Length: 614
Image (cartoon, rainbow, N blue to C red; front, side, top):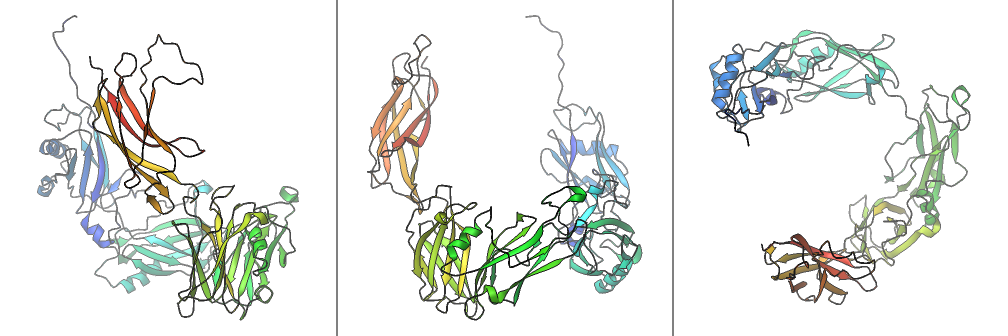
């Protein structure tokens, strides 16, 4: 080859970036919530550095810390001239901590690592100028991020509630009277709707860094503007006076569905005279027509009382997305698009609660323009029910009194399995067992049918009837993650060493356990045959490809016996020695198991390496 008289070497170009900024004072003022997030309008790269800030810089190459710091100080004299800045932390081979000082509040600065700067003992110079953008202490104003709303309507902030929170970047002045300062701050805030009407706001301090703002007069689907005027009597934790800021926002309109007062399913100790449902006024669905000719269908509420005799039919209604036709107890016509009226549907409790002392169980459903909402049960009783399907394959039902907190004894229990959670029929509702609660309110039930179902894992529902005739349920309870009637073996396997040569004996030991609903257990030795299986490979290119269905000559199997006491197997298998009978490299050794009448499965696997003896 041609020789060279000179060689040119180069190192990778160094990159500098901001890792994070630490300010102990800002953290103390805000209960550790402060962060140096970018706060300048339209600037997402400039981070705040308070007067006591320690700026941690990250580099892409190992540093000589003092050499890198001297390069930084020479290029950033106004920022790093203070003697304190030279006492940098050793935060890692590629990290440099510096303390910039003299940053004026609200002004932007650049911390520069210059082109040609040195940074390491075995590295060249920086080939490109690197910059980290910092700003002095952020002014005291609320971080609305923009003074005027953006042009795009979809970017305008939307709120769903009449109470929301404002972030105090530096907290409030800890030496001032907080109550007096809150009054001053509240007087500096104005909230107006799109017509210019001013609304009353209330402020409360949630924690050191958070204010709660509430306004009872906010209406859905309306635009508002909040403005905070400057006030020298209101100061933050660093003593800075409040500056002005403003933001426009909109409130969300009513959703296109029913709004329930509680989450589903509902459980009550007692019940008012009526079950009330709010119907939103804006309905976007059309039964027929389009646009101005849209024909909006009625909003309807359905409810049926449930007894022991009708529980299966109610379960079918609950777990059938298609729904069942039935005469509604009450319905109202939904208003046209754009209207914000609320309608109340009332379902009479006297018609739904058939138990003693106005207790009972009923099923409710609702529809809006033919689109079904989420149905559920409403349980009204003086006790609650918990249902657990244990890993041991048992069902535990616990009935607890709302009055004295103890168990409800003598209550009859029925647990149902629903095989199809989306299109259930009566045939899909199967009784898993019955029982009676003991003195502690607990009933333990052995399932009478397997967990599995044709449509996958089912869901469970328990109905409990107290001695006084009141009924309560627990619904939508999942079954254990592993069905008891689908047990499998699992295990681990080891060899005496990792590398072998042709002709060596491989000593194999395996540990086998049965994965049951209770966890891992020693397997039954009579479950089926086990074997060590190895495919050594080794066919040369000159050997014709074997026909489909014929035995693989490279496959070796050694039958093994499982120890019933320890759940272990052990065996020896020899690496083929003849040329062309074994492939060199990684070869898996598998422990396989063939259940009676079932498909062979791999229980455990270990890899060995067969080395070329040459």
